[in-house]
Length: 166
Image 1 (tube, rainbow, N blue to C red):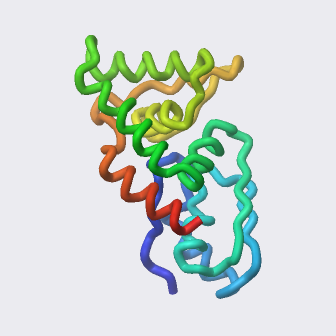
Image 2: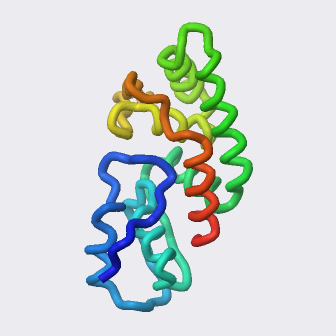
């Protein structure tokens, strides 16, 4: 039985990360390709890659900004880490505080700046890591006022590990 959980980029509601060891028990020990059609933050793919169970992976999700975060984590991990660190650090000195900073980044994201770092930051800061969009396609989840999101050092360690796996 596979018991260790795989790294994750950010906490995400609906993630299969904690279930991955149980799910992997029902998979062959080695296979050619894993296709994860509802990838979210790719918990199953990361767990399979961590165990070196497949040769290649196909990730898919309807949420293009989430896919963009995964793409950057895999292909440009250092740039994602740098960009996220910049966005995350801005909240520390933001006039109006970290909650107002969240709303600014969310507004930037909703009005065209859908870069991976902005998506990652609002996902790391929003209530329960829960992605919510309005009927007009605007990210409308509120910030979790108790925390400031995933620390850049934690995120960096996990992103680098995931990039190596995938």
